[in-house]
Image (cartoon, rainbow, N blue to C red):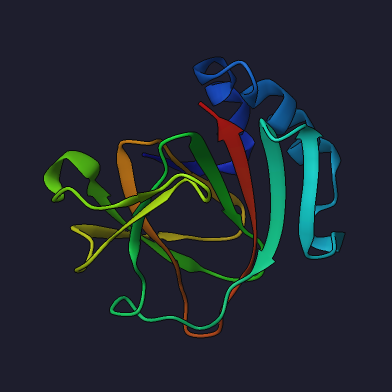
Length: 146
């Protein structure tokens, strides 16, 4: 897991070949002006999803992992708390290959507040519980094929 400020996002471009393309889009697009929905930057390999979360408590947030995609998550309209637990510390659970997701019960080991102007990157080994906010947040989720 990585959490940092948006002005440092390009420092992570070398992590994955598609990160540079995603970062160029994020840098040259007025993210707050975008409608909710998906933008395919490179087929299904690189997708930007603009979404609105509902209010959620830590107890309501469900830990999840993805086998095929890396998530770059960017809150736009408010502070989003995100839970984190290393996947290796969680019990085996079922995997939904159609939606590339596994869910885990229980609370996360730790939580971080990600504010507008920040981002978080979650890799397949990172269980995360996103969307914790008293009001919900508009956010960007970039899905990058591993």
